[in-house]
Amino acid sequence: MTNPLKNRYLWACALVFACGKKTDRPLAPAPTAPLPTAGLAGQKVSVLPLTLAAAEDTLHWDALIGDRRATLDKSDSIIGTLLAAREPEVTWVGPAELRHIARRAIPIAADPDQMGTPFLRAGNVVQVPDPLRYQLRTLMGLVGGRYALVPAGLVFRPPTAGPAGRSAGVSAELSMVMIDSRVGRVGWRTIARGEGPDAWTALTRAMKSLTPGLP
Image 1 (tube, rainbow, N blue to C red):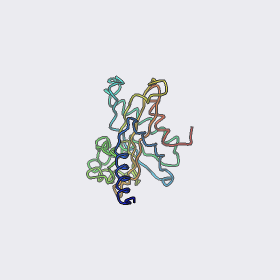
Image 2 (image 1 turned 90 degrees about the vertical axis):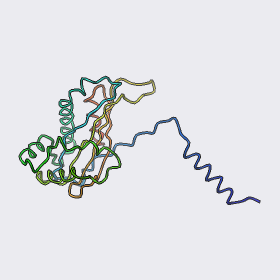
Image 3 (image 1 turned 90 degrees about the horizontal axis):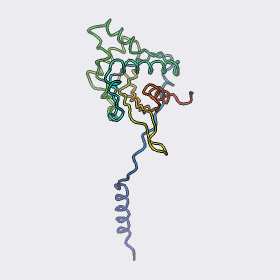
Image 4 (image 1 turned 60 degrees about the vertical axis):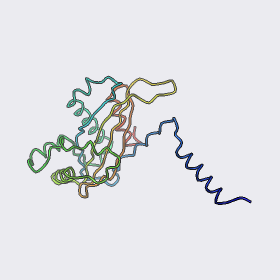
């Protein structure tokens, strides 16, 4: 005569063992979530400046990453250009305009380049803490919009290996976060990924992955 309780115990043990068993296969990255612009048509959305760019040591890009200001400015230019070209239904307010608005409102508004946004790339951040919450709410009030799109970090890595081994070029991973400044919450986040023969082509393709369906 079989014991149903014993059988259930054995099945439970087998399930726990199977779930806890490690595999050598790396987890696939989460797919890039498209920009949630459907409900933002006609609205002003501020695009904060990128303040964090890094590259893996294996790329030997000390010169590129060493010139931090030039790297950040070039990245901001690519991000802003592609947003305006691929999502024209939104009125994007870019870093240059945000800096101008903030300078005119000193000491009320904080410098957009000094807001400490890179920590937002952490996936467990939902509620934006002060002082960043207050800084965003103040700046958005001056801009006249509610939402802020934050490039929270850009990382360049070697590209993924293909069937014949590692290919030439570079992979760009751009952490993007959309914040509702009125309630201080992260409403959307993703990591946009792209590969190319150089850093700027890879970043361009990463940005294009945010608007699928377009060439």
